[in-house]
Amino acid sequence: MSEKLDILEAVRNEYKQACESLNLDPAVYEILKDVERIIEVSIPVKMDDGSTKVFKGYRSAHSLALGPSKGGIRFDRNVSADEVKALSMMMSIKVALLNLPLGGGKGGVRVDPKKLSPRELESLSRGYVRAMNEYLGEKIDIPAPDVNTNAKIMGYFIDEYINLNGSRQELGTFTGKPLALGGSLARDQATGFGVALAIKYAYQRKDLDLKDKTFAIQGFGNVGYFAAKYLSDFGAKLIGVNVSDPRDKNGSSAIFLDQGFDVEELKNIRKEKGSVLSIEKEGVKRISNEEFFALNVDILVPAALENAITEDIARTIKAKLIAEGANGPTSPKAAFYLEEKGVLIIPDILANSGGVLVSHYEWIQNQIGYYFSYEQIKKKQEDDMVKALKEVFDMAEKTKVNLRKASFMKAIEKISQALEYRGRF
Ligand code: GLU
Image 1 (cartoon, rainbow, N blue to C red):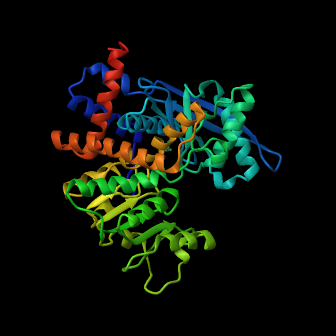
Image 2 (cartoon, rainbow, N blue to C red; image 1 turned 30 degrees about the horizontal axis):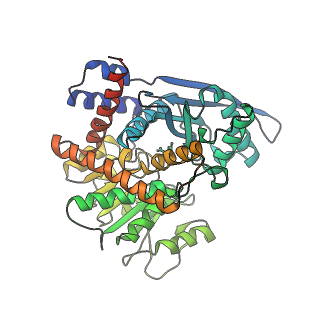
Image 3 (cartoon, helix red, strand yellow; image 1 turned 180 degrees about the vertical axis):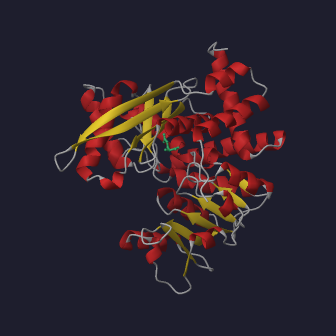
């Protein structure tokens, strides 16, 4: 059964609860309960058949107290003003937790990108930048990839931006760019690596390591693959993978291998055959979505869809740790049920924050014109994430709240200090 969610109402409520628990001046919630800026535009695109279609585009900047807004742009059928507002409010939490001098942003276009030709997609991407140009900039608002957008689209964005703005070669206006266009080493793997670091840290807090722990992963895209790769490097064993499959009646299905998959082998199968489901190997069983979530594993990593874990699914979960690789994969009701049962949930705002963290390094590199080595970035990402993880776990322990609420509290504490010094209350 699907649970209808008012995502904006839900995130507002999280801000409210955190502000109350921190005993903050009521002005802080009044300021933070809505976004500072939301832009809605219409983007006309000349289609290949000669017709013109108009798409709705949005960009929201939530809190600019700590710095310019930062966050991805998604191309998706469900994009709405409320969705980007809510997601930008979550970005404010992510960037503040990581101590970045940035605010929360998010944007999107309401479109099914699978229905566009490559030329139409390029035209839509350039149209988005033309419509939003005034509100973009290295020191204004810095977009990045999100659902259904990638480095290639960032390439169109930055090219259009530079074309529109004369000679201003401000590469740091977008992050997640191709390497040849000022992208950063290790940006593509940053979110998945961060998910693996968060899980490793959660075990370390209990003086345990990941050796021989089992995990299952939903999604084997960029985030899923790199999370699986690093978890395997840390000693854990991947036994279940759930990916979308257009031939399946539920749109997705999964594979299971008791002795553990070789992550690189799965990657090669995906590359050669289009999907990890095409694996032909002794012992591999094809299982349903339901069977996937009910697997007897230590760790579950939902790294694909929003709202993938509903309350019904939660009741079947046996994992003791869930790390949210995707944004919003666990419904609030499901999360409540799981935490009552003692499952530890590392929330999206913490677990998947590695992406925006390395985006920040990309932004720095673009502005100083000096590029860090792969090793420097990996080391800095680990140090910065462990610092944020420690702060949140400490806050959760001290105030006896879950990690999600502790993340909101820790981040809002920092944002409210900036608001106070700006004289906003
Ligand atoms: N879209 C990613 C996120 O939700 C990355 C944002 C960024 O790099 O600015 O965190």
